[in-house]
Length: 249
Image 1 (cartoon, helix red, strand yellow):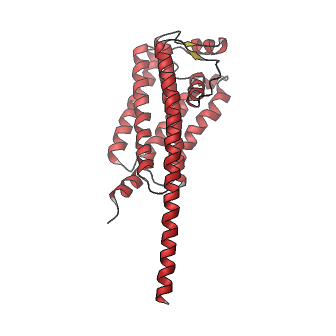
Image 2 (cartoon, one colour; image 1 turned 90 degrees about the vertical axis):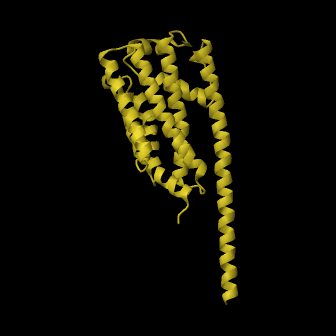
Image 3 (cartoon, helix red, strand yellow; image 1 turned 135 degrees about the vertical axis):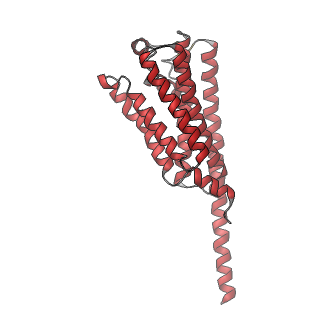
């Protein structure tokens, strides 16, 4: 009988599913900034959010309950996103943000559970770990965007960033400025061109920085521990095989 934990993990993350998700997340950071100044790039990020949603659903498609939950949240996210174009309102933006964050958090937790339960470090494990880290940055970007829209002046913005945000208005669910700021905060670079001003903005910024550092520390320790344990196990197995061969001879 196969181990239940291993079977559960394999159902959540078959080979290369985290690779597809990683690629879709990576494209968000590479391609969108290059198209932002173009006419068709105004809401280009929404296309990539959709691609990420589909890649995330594909990553959990083998688990029926997770697949259904992810699909429902994705449909709610898309419905509120479309509604914002026709009826721009802070309420719809808040709903959209809530559905999007809930979806990404659910997928990130699912991947994280897989990483914690796996007993061997593989390429799929590494891609999954990177995806969780990228999800952290995306989730906080949506939070920061919502905070600024609901409470204008929550962040001290540069002139170019403020103009970009004003032109987008509520109809733009996200822009590269807050994605940029989120990852600058997550990695604790802190360039200073965007700074939190209100207590809520400062609190979330500090929490993101702490989360990013703790995640890297705990994750690296976990993966290194798994790699060492796997190496010791393989050496012990090889040693046992040699002894068995010698005894048989």
